Length: 343
Image 1 (cartoon, rainbow, N blue to C red):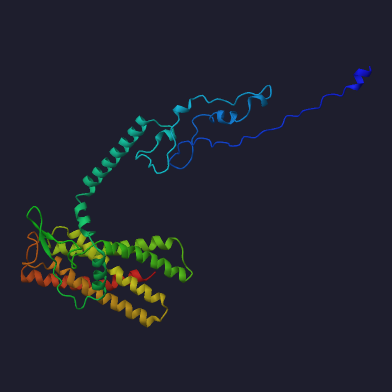
Image 2: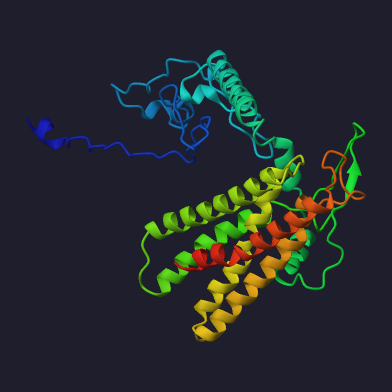
């Protein structure tokens, strides 16, 4: 018994936790087009972390981490710094294989081509696409000089349009980029959009803005342009005025009135009185009327020298009737502009 009590129990030894000196970063996964990451398998094995622990410190019952189903060799390598992704998107990130993706792209291209063919067959005869490209062929210098001509047309010389010989040997009008007197569709279209925005601004400053103002202003502007076009087109038909591309030219000439209308609306925003507002409106009307008188002369009264061969000439009696028609068209501009400035 004495020997039993003389011995002391062995000291308790608690396991000291050890921490790895370095934890490696997990391998990156391929990114989808929107920046989301898609994990095709479970996280990779932490064999590198396990090797940091001494084998003697592993406690009984310790199990290795979960091993992935797919080997690491099947995973796509991450994109290194300085490398550019391939041109084709990674359709595998969306769950599609290459065959399905190529079929979808071919189907989309076929649909676009069919749509272009449909537009060309049904609307190409009414408004040829080549004519639209011709009327949008403008430059910055042309736009500035054209706006100056529309606002200050009094001393401009000459007003005749320039012609050139096409590749097929036929004569045609030069594009607006090369001829200041050539009508374009860029300024009328931009002026139409600006008119709608200025009309909304004016109603907003007067505290009576409503989203319907945008639609009503656009509808009013399109109706005025349509009425003006129908009047000029009908007069040209009755007067037997011939010419190719005449429809787009008339629409372009009818759209220049929005420049004067915008100046009048800006004068109304200044709240300088009705006198200045009426003076700006009257000047804009006179400038637009004079501009149309001189510009439409190339359509209604073509010159025998500086005119494409398919337009033709007129006799003195026809010339008198066409001059009267031009003056009537110029006077009607005060009605059209009066409708547009009333918002």
